[in-house]
Amino acid sequence: MELVKTTDFKNIYNDMLSQFPPEELKSFENFQKITGKNYCAYDVVNNGTPVGYVILFESRDFIFIDYVAIFKEFHSNGFGGMVLETLKEKFAAKKGCFLEVEKPDVREPNTLRRIKFYQKHGAGKLGVNYLYPNENGALPMDLYYIMYSGQPVNQEIKNFITELFQNVHADIVHYENVLEQIFPNY
Image (cartoon, rainbow, N blue to C red; front, side, top):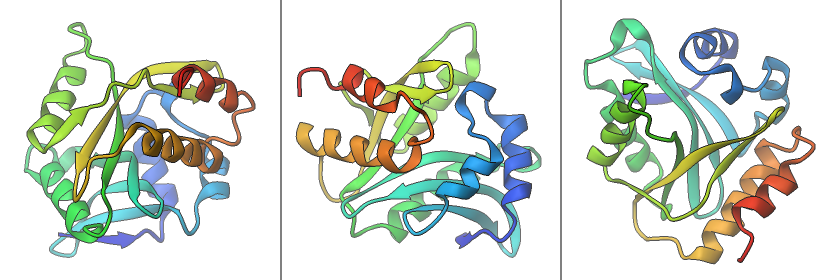
């Protein structure tokens, strides 16, 4: 399995529209504006066949998985776990990987399945009252971390999430207010 910087973000975005809730998505235009050196979309390729994608933000010490998905026709083939392992290999020099996950909801079994999947692959929930900023305010989510070579301390978490918001959520006019809600006592 390999990660290849995408040449067809439109295809990825069309799939995102079917796999992610609207309140978790940016517009296509906003994705195009922020995509660059530190925010990249990768095709997940297995034996020459694209099977999914990952969109991530990279800083000096950490990465943040903004979106990861396997195309529906390839679900339940172990590709999701392979993506996480490939990321760990590709970014082995980093301390680790942050990701946001919907709050568990027994009425939505996929939320429980996703949490169990990430935990199976080494993700631990951080004690941060995390919020995903969107046009309607903020969506409560949980912040998880997969350690590669080190556990982040509180100030590193705050600094990284602040950098992430400044680079990925700057289109949300109230993103600084959301940051203040996440880190009121830091």
